Length: 152
Image (cartoon, rainbow, N blue to C red; front, side, top):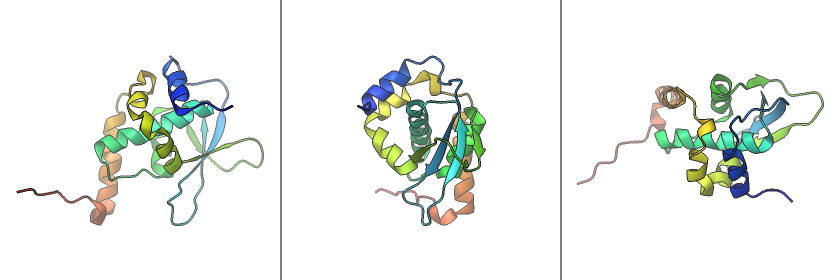
């Protein structure tokens, strides 16, 4: 029987060190890609930790800008910069785990507060890097920047 999101978050919350010796391969996808894209990453994390970590990163960026959705490249840049992960090529063989960013977000949404409380996921400079990510995106795509709402 697989664990529930509550059990997963509780398990991850208890870890002082998120990393493990075993390296896993993950394929990041996104349901809402106009054309399916796969991005591969090597990570020293179990599946439960990695899924929770990706949700944590997504929640952090949502706190900065709710309308901005991270894609696979954005997530991998943050994973490489702050979490000892490395983008890689599709493996010829072996086991890997697929993480769909949309489904991962949806799965952990009801555990938002608990995920955000996991101290071992916090990284110095993460918030600033995410703000830079969002700003670079809107500089490239100004038409997507949310308009300020004016109320009377």
